[in-house]
View 1: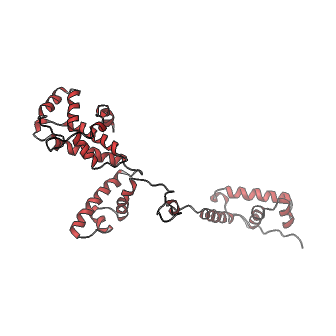
View 2: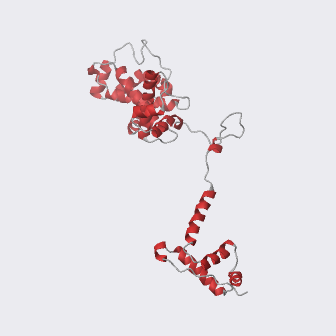
Length: 285
């Protein structure tokens, strides 16, 4: 948008030009021939000549902008159309034998469409997907006219040379221009129906289940006594003195077993090796 920055200071106030008359039943045309004015501006590059040309053809830019502008974007689109008009004036060669309006219309429309393509999205869409959306729209119109019905996704995929999944994404681009609040009511007659209720949430139970499965695999690297001690300590929440009394061993042994087991769990599997399974020592009856 660097061109827009360079020329914005010379764009006449669109609001003051909005009701400018369209003379001679043609948009941006007056009774006098502007060819000499174009020739002088192209030869001398005077700012006053360009301002006069902009004022003369501003109704043309306004007419094209109103075809695309909405109430919320009215001023922005009008200013973009005015920038496109200035670019057309700077590039126009009166010696080519074509009317200025015929040259300016594609330039102004291209500037407006570029504005919507680059800045008119509430959700940023990748450029390849935007281009695919244009191809899908054209293919839809062609196939509808030829088949007499709306084309299927597979038919559009064949026509555009893209996977069906990308076709579906391209057809959904229309909803990316304007965002809605997650708290807005989905239907007027449903008091508590909001888009937020339709958005999926991550279930923490899946994470706990995965952690549990990982823990079970890790515990299989320990011998039976270590697994029992860890279960009593961290699952049943017994203190070391209670664990020692239940297993008939000393509290120091319990502390060493816990330290050794945790250290083994922290080691990579290839460093632990296969350790012998030690039978659990039972207290005497």
